[in-house]
Amino acid sequence: MSAVRSFITRVGMPKLLTVTPTSSLLDSKVAIRATGLEANSRVTIRSVLEQETKTGLAKYEAHGHYIADDRGVVSLPDQISLGGTYTGTEAMGLFLSIQPSLGQRLGNRFVVKDIRNPMVVNLSLYCGHLNMETLQTAEPEATATAQKWYMSKDVEKIPVHSGSLRGSLFKPTGPGPFPGVIDMHGSVGGLIEIRAAMLASHGLASYALPYFNYGDLPSHMWNLELEYFKEAVDWMADQPFVRPEGIGMVGISTGGQNALATVSHFPEKVKAVVSISGCHVQNIFPMTLKGQPLPFVEFDSAGIEPSEKIDGAKETFDSYKGIYDVKENDDSVFKLENAPNCHFLFICGEDDAVWDSCHYAQEAMHRLARHGCHNYQLLSYPNTGHLMDVPYIPASTVAYSPFIRCPLNQGGTVVGTAKATEDYWPKIIRFLHAHCGRGNYGSKL
Image (cartoon, rainbow, N blue to C red; front, top):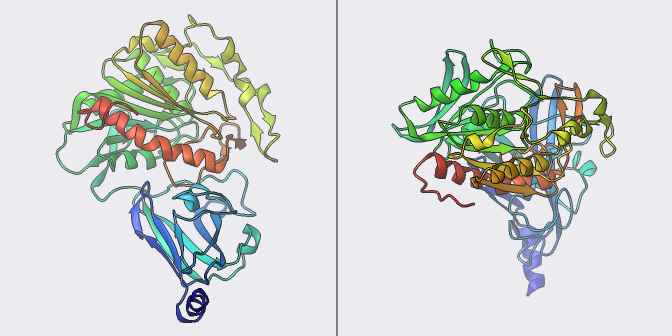
C-alpha cells in the first residue's frame, strides 16, 4: 500500500511550496510546507533575501536539508533539518540562519532603508540535499514568497523636528495613552528606525532618536551634549498620547551607553532602561554637560588587531582594556544608583568580540547592589555576539564599522545571535509595558 501511495505522489501531485501566512509582521512566525514529494525523499528548502546597496546587490540566504514523510510532505517547524545553515528543529530556522551568500562583500550588513516596505524572502524547493554552492545555479521544483513587515498597519510614522531633536516617532493609532520609549542605535550613526517601528507595533509609542550623522546633527560622536538626550526624554514625556508613568530608553552598544548616561544624570522621568551590548562607563568619546567635557575612558587604537576567526576583519576587544582598570569612584562610571526608581534590563552576548559587554553589565549590576538597589535583570546569551537586533532579519557576525573603517568581527554565530534576539524580543516588550505603562504585561521575564 505504501508503494502505491509513493507512486501516486510521484506522478499524480505537483510539487508545491507554501508559506503561511504569506504576509505578516517581521517578528511573527510562519509555517512552511512542501507537498507532492516522493515519500521519504531528500529535499532542500532555501530562503533568499536580496537588497540593493551602494556597492551592488547584497544577497543573503539560508537552507535546510529535510526528509519527506510517508505522505511526501515536509512541514516546518515539525521536521528536523539534517544539514545546511542550521540543524535540528527550529520553527524559524530558514530565517534564523540567513547569512551572506557566497561571494558577498565582507562586512555587508542588512539595513532597512524604507520602513514602509516589507522584507521579501523568496523560498524555493529542490530535490536532494544540496550545498550552498550548488544552490546558486540549481533549478527549483517550486517557489513561494513571504512578506515580512517592519511596521503594523496600526502604526503611524511622524517626523520629528523640534528644537534640537530629529528623528522619527512611531505611534500606535488612537488617542492612547501609550507607554513612551526612546530608541537608539550605535556608532554607525544616522537614523535607524526598525526597532522603534517594531516596538510601536506592540503598543509602545517609540521615538527613533539619531544623535549624530543625520541631517543637521553633529557629524561625529565627539563632545555630544548630554542635554540632547534629556531634551528627548522631556519632549517624549510631554506628548499627550504618552502615559505619565515615565519614559523607557532602549539602546544598543553606544546607544545603550547613552541611555545609561542619561538616566545617571537626569533620572526623574526615565523609568526603564534596556541596555543591549552597552557599557557602564563613558568611553570612546567624551560627552559634555553644561558645556564641559565629562570624564571618559579613551579608545586605544593600538588594540585593534586582525581577527583570528574571520579573514579580512579586525577586532577591537583589546582596545577597551582600560575599562578593566576603572575604579568604582571614577567619574567616568555611570552613577546608576541615582535612579532607584528606574528598572534596568541588561542584555549581552557571551561571545561579544567588540568589547566585554557581559562584564560591563555585571559591573553595573554590582554597583546597583552595593548601593542597595535591586532594580535590575540580566539576559546573557551563549554563542551570541555584539550586534543583536530584532528577530528574523539577517544576523551580523561581521559588519563594516565606519568608526574604524573596516569590517569588524562582532562575535558569536549567526544562529546563536539570531536565537538570542528571538528570545529577548518579547521579554523587552513585556519589560517596557510593565515599567512604563499599566504593568498588564507582567514585570517578570
